[in-house]
Image 1: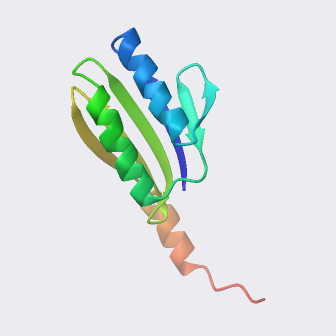
Image 2: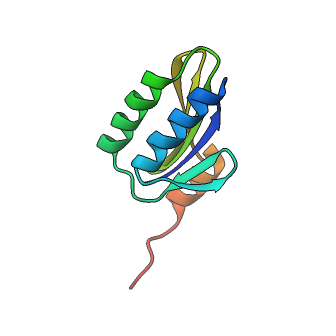
Length: 106
């Protein structure tokens, strides 16, 4: 799956530690606070979250954009030392239109 990680560290030490962890997992720095990888599986992502949680404190924030997660996009946020997950689904009208489409022939 593709994962993009946005860091908002509360201090220099946690910024350095988070960057080292992401690099060790094969993430590449795309922008100043953005790291990306297209080869992350669910197990690796769970371990990454645990390691990031270990080096963060109340003032650090992390946002992860993951696609695909069960066919939809997921946004996982660490804020104030609590993880939350938001699942982004297509609008109901788009899902209904997709369901009514006849199957394509090959």
